[in-house]
Amino acid sequence: MKDVANSPAAGQPPRQAAGRRRAGKTVEYVMQLVFLICGLIAVGFVLVISIYLIISGLPAIREVGLIDFLFGKTWNAGQEEFGILAMILTSVYGTAGAIVLGVPVGFFTAVFLAKVAPPKLAAAIRPVVNLLAGIPSVVYGLVGMIVLLPWIRTTFNLPAGDSLFAAIIVLAVMILPSIISVSETALHAVPKEYEEASLALGATDLETYFRVSVPAARSGIAAAVVLGIGRAIGEAMAIMMVAGNVVNMPSLFSSVRFMTTGIAIEMNYAQVGSLQRNALFSIGLVLFLFIMLINVILNFVLKHNKED
Image (cartoon, rainbow, N blue to C red):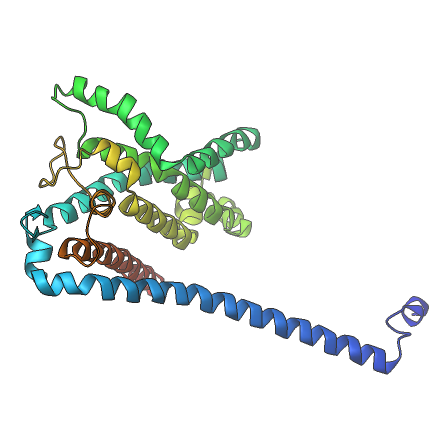
């Protein structure tokens, strides 16, 4: 009691203590205002991008026709034929293939690092994963051109190795860092009490990891998959170097063009205000809607699972 009575806070005059409280409330109010402004800026960026894509992309869709634009199989700027079905299917197949290959590898690697690996081994592997995330996409494309394309050409006896298959492999490698890092973070956030209770009930370590920890981290793992999908469907440079960039209907061992590479290749020489340039903006609008649709579907599935 004597220490409390002699403390500086206890000996402060009432006016000084009230001033400190007012200063604390002012700082708290200012920080709340800063957080609100940052949040509004983030939302504003999304709105500006959305409005710009809509304004720039709708003229071409109106002129070409929504059905002809989305389901047309021919893209020929010289004849003003702008059908993007081949590019849409190529992007969907390429992204799906990368997810099929990359998600299991990334998921099991995250479980290994978070739950199974000894601390020293995990500490040695994490920098490698972070290094993968920092490698520029053009380097992935360069390695794909030098190593992957000759291997595909020789192994499958093809005239050229640039193909949808090469793009899928490159994308699968590129999405690994996002899936591993976010999934591992989600697994680390699971309370230890969950696992201890499972082990106390007689479950094995693996049963605990896959039946307790993974379901508890489901939302974080789903977010990792969404990031992987966004990285795969939005990649351009690396895919441009290994896919062949020919507007064909997708086939595993034929040259193809993704929507992103279509924009990157033709935007430089498309005249401002031309139908071709507006059609390229329309492709960007379709890409944007794809990402939004994926997020809506995933949020619906997660919400449905939580209610069950």
